[in-house]
Length: 394
Image 1 (cartoon, rainbow, N blue to C red):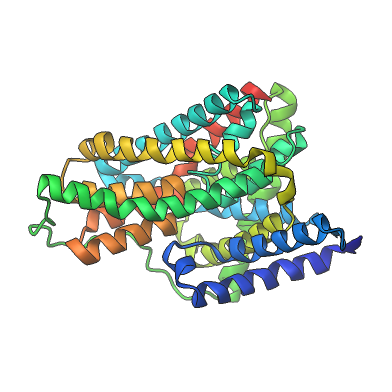
Image 2: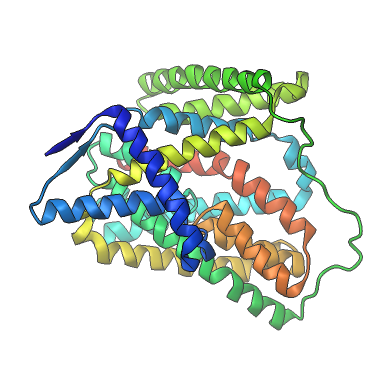
């Protein structure tokens, strides 16, 4: 057995992230479906480790003790990005879209848990192919997978990663065809009356060492308080609340308090940069350490659950959400985004919508609403639903 120490494991995670980025730029399929670089690099390493172990060559042991630090940091940056001023900016459409994402998270867990129970699998394994990996993506799959493994559900992280990867590909495949169907059926065209450009991005100054350090101070404060909040809440109620979830919700509170009293203290460029880096390392570390050989017996049930998730989102977005959003061209483009991040991630949603508008015309409302909800607000509903499910079936 080769035992790789803590520092070398971090180096490998960064190297695999770089390898994934290189491969994405060289392989069109990976770029087209917005497969994240750490997923590519991490899964390649996991596949290699599996081959080496199953063939009896050697077993690789990784020290992933720093993984939780990167994970908590990432979720904290998500919380600091969740400004409720954005809700006002998006108006009624954003509220409808946001509520639809909450409903989707609930139904994805219902589908996953129900089908798992029918097939004689632990319900929480089904949940890992539900909102955790579909709407939550690889980040949530790795985070909650670790939580479930700590509760005794073996291979949860591996199953979540596999389901999230399938979801990413499916989300990139179905968005365009759905919009093509809607545009053709209802003869939809862009709103030519829409003349005023909507600008929802903060115009912030360049990153400096001083402003960057301020963001690090805010992030580490939220992490410290949030982890204690999670621990105290769990001990007082018996309700599992992981530390990274507590950190994220403390960050949401801090962000909205800062918005009211000192909004200039928040620099989203710095926070987004920290979030991107920590997510990349966290995902690489999580995926490179998964044990693919442990889920061979669950491959068919997992595929069946993911297929059911894809079928549900196609039906719901086409026949329900489209009408709720106004049954117009903007609604159709938002449906493409919904399919993208409802099964994969926000980059999937943006890629879907970009492909649609390049063919059919612009939709400013869609490009306002979808990124705000997909990148920041979606977890406000999704994570409580996931945590509740865990506590119901643990």
